[in-house]
Amino acid sequence: YGPVSQSVVLEWIAEQRIVAGMWLYPMASKKWLKAGDLPELQETLASALAAGLTAPVVVSPLVAGVPVGALRKVAMLSAMNDQQLGRFAQFMEIAKVTQFELVVEHGDPGDAMYVVLAGSLRVRQMVAGKETVIATLRVGDVFGEISLFDQGPRSADVLANEDSTLLVIGADRFVEFTQKMPEVALSLLLAISRTMASRIRADNERHKQDLLVLQNVKQH
Image 1 (cartoon, rainbow, N blue to C red):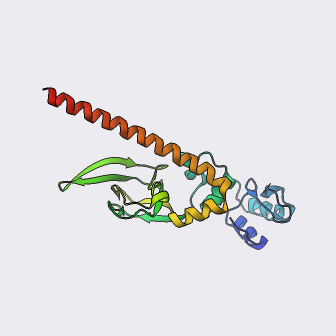
Image 2 (image 1 turned 180 degrees about the horizontal axis):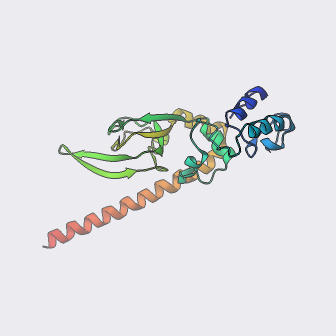
Image 3 (image 1 turned 45 degrees about the vertical axis):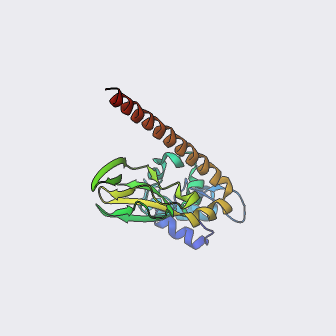
């Protein structure tokens, strides 16, 4: 997250956004170093600990109050280290949605991918005025990733079951991310490909089962 000035880094230490074990990239050295190994930060880190911060909570460099552990629950991001997560997070925004709020609507053009950080949502289709729930999305689940590639129409509604927190990356920001950080983007693109392949296999299996049911009905 940056570049930022040393004064900002010192402020973030006081706010517990930076702790001794976090990796930083000083422009002078041009290499990754832990904050606790930088002489210019050691006094401030020690003062923070002396002030009673003996068990600091590591938070994401993107969103204050969102633990790195929450991002670690996202399977699609599991291959990234903390540095890569921080760089990717620069391109995302946080969204708070309330219970029953419609996050995406069937038929609307897709323009973003969503990551569930807290709460739960449901994917539904309305058939003859009745709701059919296709899937329930929980912490760590991702939806809308196909729209990052084709911006095609949404295939279903996504509705919040409860108050939820989402991370959002828009299609335009995703393109910028792949151009500016290709080495980090590669890991994410491979993960998205695996997720899409898994969903296609699951859909094929469901279609196969549906055909078997239809054949059995015809035979009887």
